[in-house]
Amino acid sequence: MQAAVIHEAHQSRRDAILEAAEAVFAEEGYDRARLEDVARRVGIRRASLLYHFRDKSSLYAAVTASMGEDLARRFRRALDAGGSPGMRIERTVDEWLDYAAERPALVRIMLRELADGASEHARPFAEQALTVMNAVRHVIAEGQAAGSLRPAEGLQVLSAVLGASTFLMRFGAVLGGIGRAPTTLADRAELRAFMIAMFRNFLGTGQSDPAVESHATAR
Amino acid sequence: MGTRGKETRQAILRAAEHVFAERGYAGARMDDVAADVGIKRASMVYYFRDKRSLYLALLEDLYGELGRRYQQVLDATASPVDSIFGFLDAWARHVQERPGSIRILMWESARIRRASADPLAERLRPLQGTVMGVIAAGQEQGVFRSIDPMRFIMIVTGATAFLTLGMNVLRVEGEALSPAELRTELRSLIQRILIDR
Image (cartoon, rainbow over the protein chains, first blue to last red):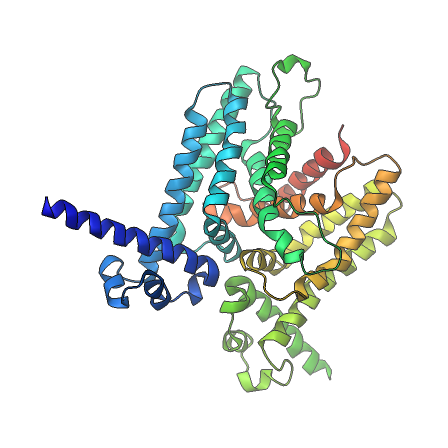
């Protein structure tokens, strides 16, 4: 019993460190993030932090691994639920937007990883993200084989939809300083409609009768 | 500044592109740039007095060059469709030759904005204006769909980032796009979102 209590305390301390680290890495980037700042946010000493994570690199690996697990869990939920391939793919949009809304730090860490050419510490995340991409591609291929989705290369479709949506979530802020206010898609409903429209445009998700679609699209 | 001085300045800017692309503004160090060029940090001050002025010059260099490429396209094309696909080719070539231009956009998107007057936004503004002007002209002529031009720019930029940098992150072997493939993908994307009905 006592061991269980200790284990639980250990686990919740570890979770608190991860949560603080997520914010610090998003704000400062890997290079500038300091373990002291993470420890201070949690309200513990640096030495106690080192008891849970031996160095910055392993802390970052744990944060990005948790990003990847969360992403994989959400996408699995969308893809494993029933329905046509098109419905399953469109359902990933809500999971993706929930993910970005609930853990905005993760989107920023992802952008940093894109910017710095993918660090070695983020490999666990990259592996999970690749698994997620492949799972979506698998469902796309399934729909295409059954004739309910249009032929389009899954990887490129996802790059366009996820790339555009990630960028839209953040880039409006970059352009925000100039006089003419740009249209951003900070608004969730708008972003959702935009992503669904892109999937429909590329793959014909949301079509009940594929025969209605006259043109087989270029890839 | 003599020829030698101009060459050194150019070499510093190239090194700065690499360092800022790799580490972002916050993580970049003048020492790294100097080491990359093979000069002393003290000599660099003659060209750029501090990190901020080096960064501003780099933004000017990167996006100024893109702007000149767009201007050449405008001068050489007569229709909005030709201009927009010309911009796209110029953009794909620019991203390939000067990868710092897209990586810096990612770094800046990850930061929380504090300053209201942002030098990057200022640099990008004329480029946006050029592209938006062509889109508006195409829409007026009825050859482009009625997509919001800002949104169009963001879609193409975001897709470019994922198609190039995203593939690095995922380490998708054998699926990294060649410059020609990137161009083909983006052309097909533009065709879909701007032209097809």
